[in-house]
Length: 107
Image (cartoon, rainbow, N blue to C red; front, side, top):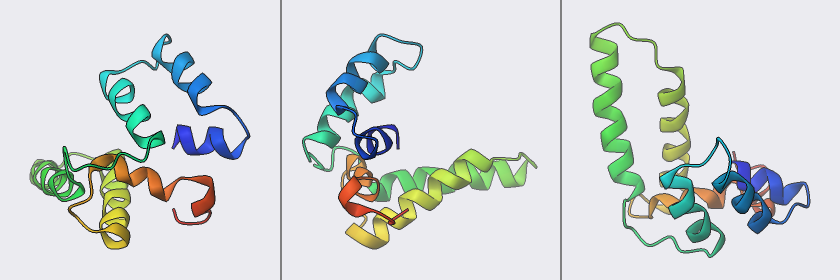
């Protein structure tokens, strides 16, 4: 989302990556995934389908224990949209296609 929003605002996505990677927003996932997303590397290292399976397990456990999980539900919805649009074998970085400026209105 951050990369797509930055690109829509006219920001250089590389500058955003550099800033995030040295700020409180830094994470191993962002460091690994952002360059792959921007490079259209959607290889299935971890597929959308696997994320959906894992989210289903986590959400089922949360439901059974009465835990409120609005963020996980929102994430599941995004991965479902990606699976519907591009297939569940798509690499997880492929969800970026939903947010690219040229994909306006997808999410």
